[in-house]
Image (cartoon, rainbow, N blue to C red; front, side, top):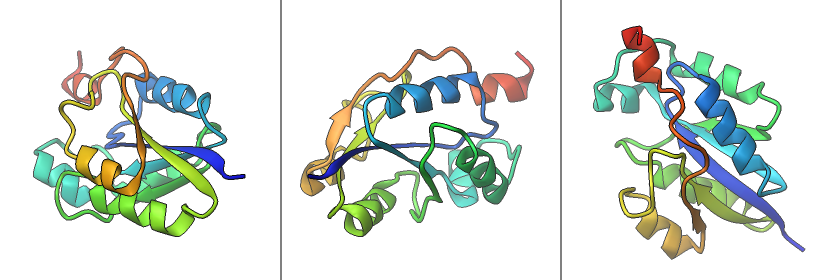
Length: 141
């Protein structure tokens, strides 16, 4: 029998208590939590200020208790479609996957929906409220 795995993604630049709630809520729904850390290229494409490099963000995320597996996004755009595809191809024999969004995203607004549907990856909305924001922290709010 396959285990259930949740995939989440984000910039985590910097990581904050809202991200921890997101991870914990996702982990509560699955056997394993996979986290895609958006790359420095993606951060640049988004136009957000660099706080930490991707390698540092990956180390921090990897060491959070709820996280079982973390990778840096391989995508060359602002989506994580290629990264989701990679995880499903790499681990799909062992896991049934779902892709989950935090409180500030929903399945009507994310570009990963067609990829998830094509791969048979379930979609989960609203894992936690937007209780904090990396951009708020960087702006000193």
